[in-house]
Amino acid sequence: MDQVKAVYNSKTVCPVCASKIEFTKVRSKAVRLIKQDTDFCPYYEGENPMFYEAVICPECGYGAHVTSFDNISRYDKEKVRNEISSKWHKRQFTGPRTIDQALEAFKIVLLNLTCIDGLKSEIAKICMRIAWLYRYKGDQEQEKKFLNYALINYKKAYSQEDLTEEGKLDEYTCMYIIGELCKRLGLYEESTQWLSRLIMSYSDPQQKEKIPQRLIESARELFQEVRDTVAATKEEG
Ligand SMILES: [Zn+2]
Image (tube, rainbow, N blue to C red; front, side):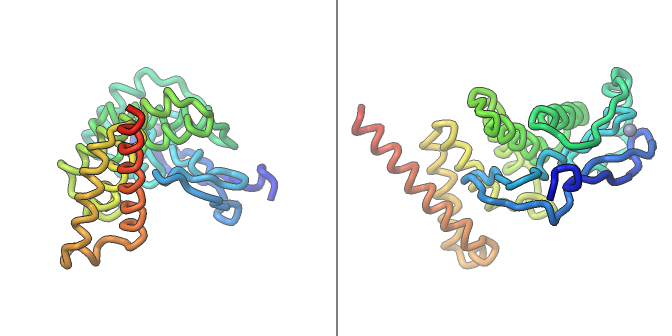
């Protein structure tokens, strides 16, 4: 399928300024996931649907992840109008996106989340995507910077938020991602603490059924990998 037909525009109403707007989506038939990194960074053949997950209102500058675009309180709408819309220059965001255009859109979403003091789990989710986009570009410095923001916010989400709510990352996947991010940032001891906490939860019969088998297998592999890395570092030293 050619690139032009892989994406199409969908209509919605902006919850902040009530304008009728369009945003671009990828046809599900055009999506082919080839592989994922250990932190779930996806790789696609053809169009990457992640590039389109940041939906921005061209009229007022409100932006959110496509799954939470409509979920904004009246109080937060007012904040976006005062702090973002007042400085916004109208512009279009529809059509095929490059990595850089996707990055820009996600950064506008992050700005919105900062403005409304959004949920830490949502901030972490957006930071992960920004880090992955930098990974695609081969910019390791920026990638690490955003992985670190994601880590800080996932840790806050773990301790402050109810992760059993629908649509949210569950607490066990959250523990795994924290362990994975710690490893990527060289925080090996902290990584093994989070992973062993997850692995121990699996031996509790009441928690076991809530934890996917595949997640535990990944956690065990990652735990071993971190242990081996630490042992190798000690031998070298
Ligand atoms: Zn708007």
